[in-house]
Image 1: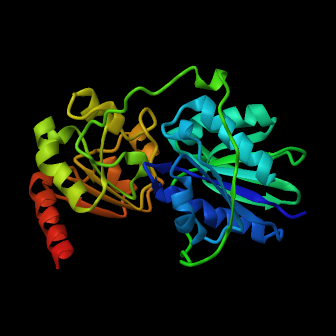
Image 2 (image 1 turned 30 degrees about the vertical axis):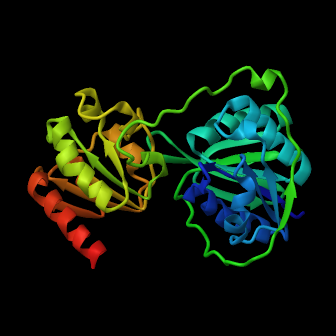
Length: 330
């Protein structure tokens, strides 16, 4: 039986999140094994302007839902819009990234469509007529596999960087279909009056390919700003922090990495002055490459690190930042 997959493309202010493109890798593997089709869905007023960028990843059809009500995320309108796209595309499998938006809206769509749902998947395969999803449990120590029933729509959210994005093919032509959608009165009960951006423009840890994290050894917010932020900016990455650093007030809890914070899977994770409590390790052990910088050679972080540096972070990190800047300028 062929599997038709619909990929939900998540964008912010007209820019597609890189993790959305990664979904095409798993979608192709699922569809290719059964001779199915891969389609894409773009939400928001900017949807029409993003079709060329999405078409480069070779979907068969692109469904655009361009309602102005989708400019800023609200659960009810987005749920209705995705359901409208599902009605038009009629997929067997719906894929979203495991972002804050995906985690919020996927269960709502599943409830409306009476669909099977798997969250935060690291591997998706098919076995017979079932979609099989793998997720980690118990602080990443076990891998659970779930078979989703095939008598209904299957929905899965996929962890960022669990798959690499396929190579784009610029100029690929895809059929574009506009989906009519207008939120009802119930979906308009909550309106966004104003959006105010805060912070330094540093990326969110859940959306970055590179994360530079600091621990309690930084000792102050000022140290983060002088040591950690410059390296993150030079690498075009995000700033993370351990729970101890956040509890001490060195960084906001929105940057906390760990089981009690945010689970991340970047391409590169640099841990500066983080010993490696089990909760923190569970939140970042899925990173492709882990670099640990710590003066304690017995620190648990070294057990999971790809590269370990027993060194003073206040000396090594600025030197590393300078070298990165030289390479970028060269």
